[in-house]
Length: 188
Image 1 (spheres, rainbow, N blue to C red):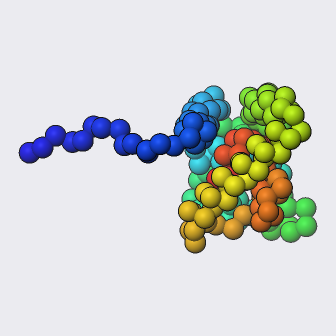
Image 2: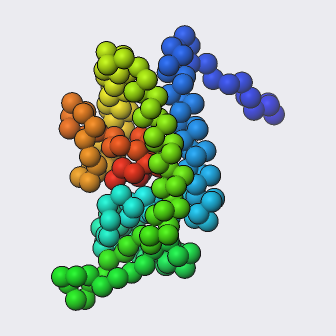
């Protein structure tokens, strides 16, 4: 019986910027885990909170659509968020039988207290480059996003709530960290 191959795969002669993108994805995952740990939530619940914070009150079915969960599963998510004080169910203002799920103000302050300083530093970083350099960086990142979308293919869910950040397709990455931890509507 042979030993498993422990060798790290080689990506060939790739540009250092390409390797840094992989590192950015990894450190973003680390940040999300850290934020989830601080808030006492799992990754699904953190994603739900991101939607509630960025979009405001959502019906359970709207939240289920955004999370691609069944109504039973999203009920469990909402129950957990309520038990931890991160969200509350409130009566729907125009549908007396409906409810909305709202992020609590304390939870919003706590999450944004971690997210906004990082987003601000990231924004300061891009602004430290000349206008021409900013255009090149933005063009590069836009192409990277489109490359990812191409490789996601048909499995890519529609996200009508996503705001445009100048993407040629009109589907930008929002204003957050670009991977769902920011204040953008997309948190997937």
